[in-house]
Image (cartoon, rainbow, N blue to C red):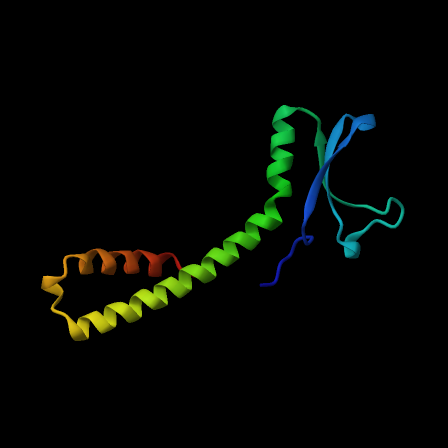
Length: 114
């Protein structure tokens, strides 16, 4: 997947002299040669902003987890589709009460899979 953001990991660090907290990346490609840092953003220090900074700093990890879960979901959809196909050929769906629920789950998963 192509990303248009600074690669992670990102970290939160205080900037006490400025009364700020900042989010940095260690990615060398976007590094400012004067400060030798890669500043993602900075905000005024405070409990709400500290929580916001932690959430923002987790963005690359959350994006990676989303991509991993999409891949797992695609595998599960394919497996369930294959299983239902075999069941259609081998079993009478009327004798299998789980089949409608499985078909409904597959339909919902296919609607949300990009």
